[in-house]
Amino acid sequence: MKDLYKTLGVSEDASADALKKAYRKLAKENHPDATGGDKKKTERFKEINEAYTVLSDQQKRREYDRLRAAPVGADGMPEGFDPDAFAQVFGGGSGGAHMGDFGDLGDMFANLFGNAAARGRGRSRAPARGADMVGTLEVTFKAAALGGRQTLRSGSGTSVNVNIPAGVETGARLRVPGQGAPAPKSGQPGDLYLDIVVQPDAHLRRNGDDVELTLPLTLGEAVLGTQIDVPTLDGTVRLTIPPGTSSGAKLRLRGKGIKRPEGGRGDQLCRIEIVVPRLKPDDIESRHLAEELERRTRPQKVRGF
Image 1: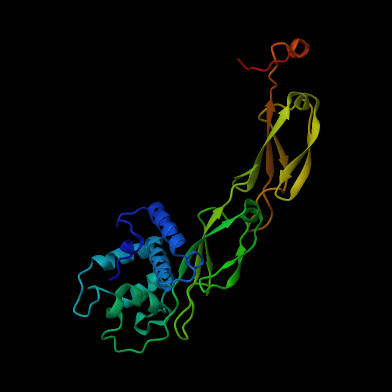
Image 2: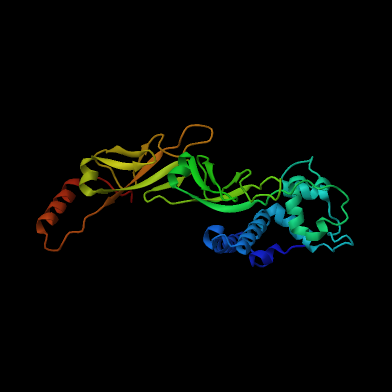
């Protein structure tokens, strides 16, 4: 049985993060775009994707480990091998899939068991399906929040438009049917799985369905009030700062947050942060103004102790 851990160069107890790190390194080194179409490296790239497709899925990895540890029977297959159970796990379906006819699982079956997959089965085999492939898709903060479309290169080398669902987060996996590795002869191509990585925004942060922004104010702006143009997912919006606004206050922009799958959007919360000026030792006039402001506002109770 093929050693998928060896394919990725990791130990059998490798964590999910270690698997992902090894996969990304090898995929980058052997990607057709980086190797100029080198046939050996292209084949290696397919093997890397196949291995990661199995080991990055907890259920598939458990079943693979179980079969790999089982004694090998006279037919070259692991003892206790159940074709329908194999189809259930690696096909992702529920019933109706039978490994006896191979179907779309033929490529996975053959890749894992090699020649044993073809010996003594006594049944006709449907055209092999192309291998599934796994990649990483980086999306902007705005596209992840509001949804969008992104064009990338599929496993067959063609360009494909991928729909990015609104509200998607880093760690999510998108499935693009039929955009994996091409199949030999008349078989169906595999699927493309994309692990989402959301790029951070320079100013905005996500908190559930809301978006948060730290908004610095000068002392004068906070005391007197003002209007400031602030960034949002929809562009710049003018926000009114009421007079006497304190640090830590949150001003709400309704409907400017993350788009929800069921409809509607969260809000944007602008958290006020007053930037206190540093006076130069010889700036006597400014110091006197600060002392006068302190004298006039001292009756206000600002601490609860």
